[in-house]
Image (tube, rainbow, N blue to C red; front, side):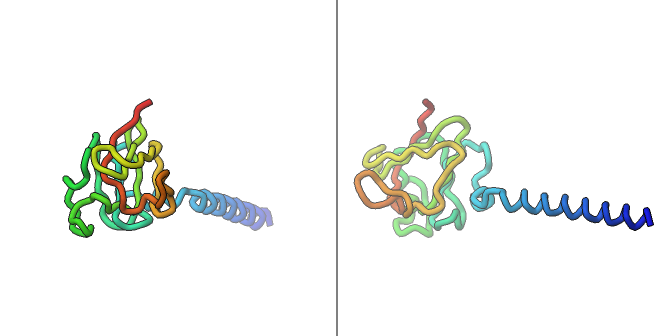
Length: 143
């Protein structure tokens, strides 16, 4: 009888551990898996032409005055200019600053390190409209 009691206790303990493990997995941020194509601690600003980090991302480091320099066949202009629909900052120590015009013109938007936006249409620009398909340049702010 002690043997059956021990088995029940062990089975209950395994069930608790499995339930706790399942809870931990369920609490993991879904966005982390969604932007997995932007390597952690890579120093990149990554962006996608689809919402929810769908497709193959563009990846930039450093300051870039005009995104027309970066080809993207799936975009209307054939470049990344005015084509990003989601974005993620994996900068090493700085915040990313994107602009709605080339040469750091237009509206600026600061994207904190290790954060992003799964749908740029959900984020409003100061001058009106949203950030979907309007980013044209980027730089970094290390303050």
